[in-house]
Amino acid sequence: MANETAITPTRQADYPEWYQQVIKAADMAESSPVRGCMVIKPWGYGIWENLQRQLDQRIRDTGHENAYFPLFIPLSFLEKEATHVQGFAKECAVVTHHRLEEKGGKLVPTAPLEEPLIVRPTSETIIGDSFSKWVKSYRDLPLLINQWANVVRWEMRPRLFLRTAEFLWQEGHTVHATEKEAREETMKMLEVYREFAENVLAIPVIAGEKTEGERFPGADNTYCIEAMMQDRKALQAGTSHYLGQNFAKGSDITFTNEQGEIQHAYTTSWGVSTRLIGAMIMTHGDDDGLRVPPKLAPRHVVILPISPKPEQQSAIFAYADSIAASLQSVRYADRTLAVQVDKRDLRGGEKNWQWIKKGIPVRIEVGPRDMESSNVVVYRRDKPHKEKLILKSSEVAEKIAAILEEIQQNYYNEALRTREANIVRNISTFEEFKAFFTPKNQEKPEIHGGFVLAKWCGDSKVEETLKEMKVTIRCMPLEQSGTQGACVITGRPATVDAIFAKAY
Image (cartoon, rainbow, N blue to C red; front, side, top):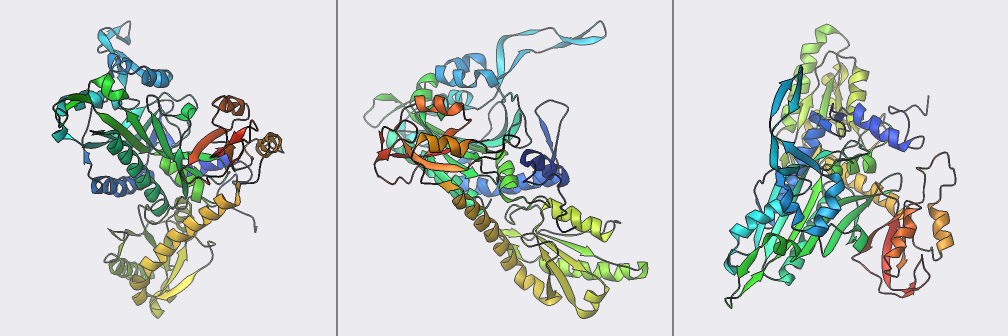
């Protein structure tokens, strides 16, 4: 059948279920026995490792050092910053006992802790305690620290990679002598995230500032990068927070300045998580499965030996190995090419479709005729699965890096076209706004408009109005038009451009 796809249902038929089936078909992750938590399998974790390696280098290149802080946070630490604890209170997992004893054939907790411990939802308070000891003088500043860790936020509606009770991330925390330096740090790291999302994940993003209602608890300003998924919903792909002196006061982070005066420092925090893998799936995946940008792929190339007759197998395997060896000297995106020869005892079609669903960038088939003519058959994941390119085996190593870079760029360009085609800039009244975000087909509520770029008057009450439609102000883009107009919600005079959308 012409319309047959590897993933059922298709994106058009049921996008949320398509997403789950892509993860399953690509063998990336699965739900764990602990509700809301996930097991990340080797293919999914390989993507995370490549993401981590490349982002970590960017973090180091901007002067930051890695450290590690405790998983457990004393309850009293969270209470030091009232807005912070209020923002995370409903998501906290709390440890209250430290011993188990058997009673009546069951294990029961018996030794209460003197003070409950919070399993970290984020680390500002526990890191702040260390910073208060490390920072004494202006000579100790700036202090630029990052950690790779897991965090726990009790999630009521889990979805693999997008929202899980436990997830992996990096969180940067910095201390500065002046507001100016701290604000510069906040924007510098936002730009690191923007460049990383676009150049490595091939996801076009809009950088902007969050509204007060969407701000990180305890921050003075929160900045973000917002991406559009293929169902035209928004996904927050990273955040950078200017914390002012709020956490410094709560944790007593003070220093002696050049004039010999004691003052509170200025701090920032910023982070991205395994949610970026969810963003990658929903930005690039198709109805045949995952499509992994080459810069993130655990394997760049799989070589599939095809031997119709048992007596041909050893020769074809040797031919495949020789091609793999020639590719292993190639470097792409500061990394030696990762190549696998798939010699598993499976039918050729089954192996081929497994790799298509995993989203490997390039598949190379070699059979008896290819070996005789010193050719290989190349298939690219950014092209229809039957479209092939025949190359001489001697030229594959020479051309593979360019092919991979073209695939990487194609994924970005496709995602950018999708986003630009679904940003509406000409909605000027609330009636038009409501019509845009109201599904025409109520049987498929996941079908909705896209992004609306329109004026906002700055009234926080607007956000309460939007909740009924499940729409939020995603950000106020850093690039503002500077023009005057009418707020799309209230009709009042407005100068601020804002992105409105439904979101994950």
